[in-house]
Image (cartoon, rainbow, N blue to C red; front, side, top):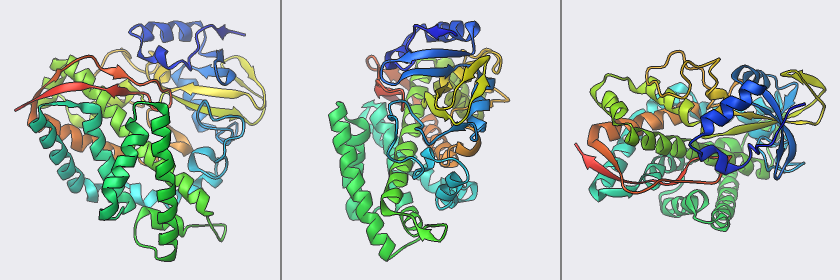
Amino acid sequence: MLTTAIDLSDPGLWSRADLPEIIDALRAEAPVHRTDTADDGPVWSVLSYDLAAAVLRDTATYSSEGGSLLGSGEHPAGAGRMMALADPPRHRQLRAPANPFFAAGKVRHAAANIAELAAGIVERAVELGTVDLVDAVSALPLSVMCDLLAVPDEDRAMVVQVCDEAFLGDRPEERRAGHQRLIPYLLNQVMLRRREPGDDLISRMAVHRVNGRLMPVEDVVLNLDNIVVGGVQTVRHTAAIGLHTLARRPDLWRALQTGEARLDPALDELLRWTSVGLHTLRTASRDTELGGHHISRGDKVVVWTWAANHDGSAFDRPHEILLDRSPNRHLALGLGAHYCVGAPLARAELVGLFSALLEKVSVIELDGPAEYNRSIINFGLHRFPARLVPR
């Protein structure tokens, strides 16, 4: 049994300049390692693309109900009650009311509004000149999420402020406080819309029935909170790290501006490159074999998304950014039953944001060092000071 001395759950590891060499060396030694983590004890770490895909597809063997993220504890509170913590067929039942709001047709209908929102955000950032791009790009997914939830106009400033605290607070306690303010607000809105439902996501989930019974209010709130967190964080961190990369690679920025590189495949490549959702946790529901190792029922198995998305057996020149990479079967948005429900919306937001920036900004100049956050759940930049030079 190979037990690596490297704690892959250490957030500081994933911002190291020599990360590619570290992961490649571990993967070459073995695609699956026994890892002793600081907070979760021993886990099986999956580093290869093929085995990562196999684990994510096989929900019968690798369950989500023991937690989908490291740090969830032995018995996560939302097990079997949240989309992220449920296996099929329960997962499909919980996901059903949200699906129509993220369907491709619905997102195409919203694309013009998303583009308009993105243009306004970029124009304000350009007027300011020097901005924290992490903060600036967050405004788009927050605005879109308010539309999706039909947050009343009089509440929007408060909701945005609470989400800012929950997602952008400098200290863990500040982020927790913001989150603790968001939950009661969602709870109140669920109760109001259960009595008078509209045609919005909160209402649809508030009146959703599973096996003929209304979903418990607490379960509705848990799932809404999960959607808000995922919807804001994926776009925010992918956009911020992607723009930081392009700021340091003006040749790639110019290729996008001149049309030499197309935006859609380029954004898929940035999703692969950044892999901001660094890992996915599963629990073995039966004895099995994985990468030559015996996995016992109850063992924790962690798919390290960044490692899988930088596996040379699946991607040519994996540590290079190839804006025209095709095919690009990255795992940044998941795979199988748990493929990200909001993927079409996240793509539309990234298209709107990058299109507006390419149209209105000639150069993104670094205005000081970027600061990485310390998270293996939503890995990204905590701060990215930059100057936007208008076209």
